Length: 160
Image 1 (cartoon, rainbow, N blue to C red):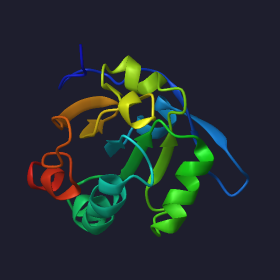
Image 2: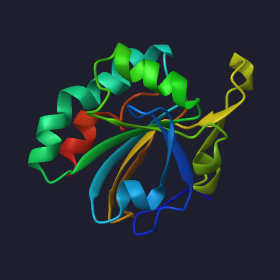
Image 3: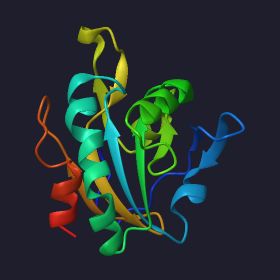
């Protein structure tokens, strides 16, 4: 069963890149007392994720902030070093919080895993976006397989 509006995000620990190297960051560290736009990608450096999904949040960041979003975060079932390299490559390190869900614990806990073994990628996260206010989901947009329509930064912004 996947995450729904009104539900609290599960308590997990991500890894996030910092100036001092990888550091743990709990769900509470990221979401407590803040209104956060979170988007998930099946894989950093993959075509749609790099060409469309991440750029859509980079382009929408100022408008999201103007509508009350305190932070933008991205999660993927990738290790923290890949997430950091991807953020640097796209000029968002420090602007978008990169949350490595390396073992897929968050994706599993919210019921949004994807079997990408046909692509040699194993279990990944489905593509989605959400807004959580103090860790409670107020909007969630899950893509159908292979789609990129409802999880973009602009779609999230248009539905705030």
